Length: 429
View 1 (cartoon, rainbow, N blue to C red):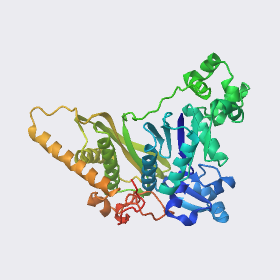
View 2: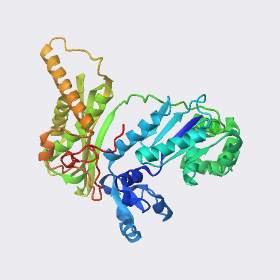
View 3: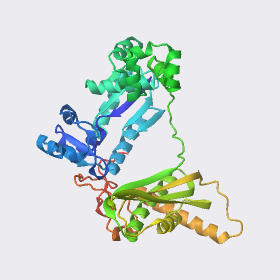
View 4: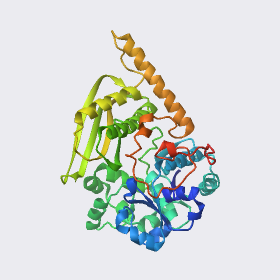
């Protein structure tokens, strides 16, 4: 028996966790730079406001309807997600964190006599200990459990189990386009062939599905029939590349401002490769100039390859600054930039310099320093240590967050200088 635990309107629920006065009121959460709607409360969904709608188009409508607008706060959402996953991991020996707000759990059949009651207990603890409402779907496969969780949320049941006896009724009532693994274009094609519901889809001949929708379509059909084909991925694969890029909140023109922005991005990329115990054999740096410049839009970019893979902030930042100095063109108005680390390899399996022992010792010192900074920042829950040049640069590149909620988490502020100075009182894990 598999269970999919899905947080209801996760970003909105996180905002309500720190602002209880928003409960029961219409709320939307915006993407980076306050661009589009990425999360809606049930009240907003009832108004017919679609997901992904650009904020500037419906700003007036939201104000007229009395909708509270919140800027996205990914650091806060990440902290709340870690609490959710920590609680779920206590109830299973095998868990796949599918996204920031979803996780598949393998329920031990020998110790769980009533899966519905077991899931209801998880849901109750999630509400009491973390404060996030969740919907849980129970079924024999991942695709069916995904469908069960959506049905549980849609009808307000909270927990729904799809069994062999009830699967037919649920699938016949589910549009084929709502099935996890069937995209919009595939649903249109299936409708042309007379397949309108998930029930119609599972009754189709498997060979026909294989020819029409490749192996992925066949896997989805078998999953809907109750045959497990998608195993739990408890250990995520190592990334092949790591990219950190941002559309900046202000247009940058000077090289000094670009240095500050790129340093911030490279530090985040370095933290990620060290977290995965990797080292970078190459780096790409790019900067984009926008339509402000002669009505044009384009990129300046360049790659750099390292003889010995690197992972320390000092070496990564120096390499990025060298590239940035070569691709920078004065007179342009830059709107976005970022760095990509690729040719990744294990940090513990690198070849040492044969003739330059001083270089090896210096590199080891830089790496120990970077790991120490990571440990301090992890303990603080955010960015307690960062180069002074970032604060001196005024954080001009930070995304616009005109509607950001004040939160009490250490890592919730995009500007570390404005982060809260007291520990998070809700951190139970």
